Image (cartoon, rainbow, N blue to C red; front, side):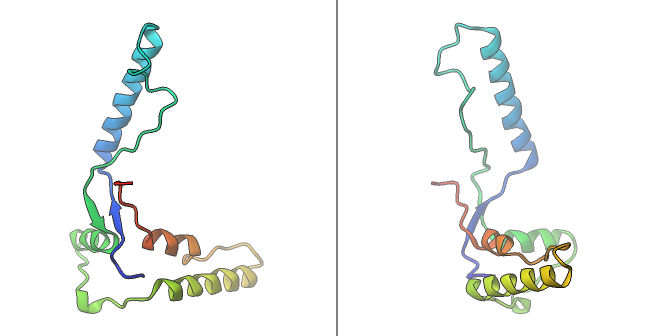
Length: 124
């Protein structure tokens, strides 16, 4: 889906947990020591936890598939332009919604197409 040039920055779960542990410790330290300077406080702050390792979205997906024993060769890939994918998703969502009387949601959604084709580089 899309041109395949959209970068993502995936996080290794242990790194994500480590970041949360560090933040929790900083919150506890600040709550127990009222004299902590405003520069050492983390409450009310937003943090972007990242590995800072950029992957093309579909390259990462194919690497995971290969590790699971289901490698995907480049010649097997059919590229669908983003606009076509979005159109197909709109049709799939509406047709399934109508046929199921609003009880089911399509696996192919506009949100999923947008997510898999957006650029999520952590260098904002």
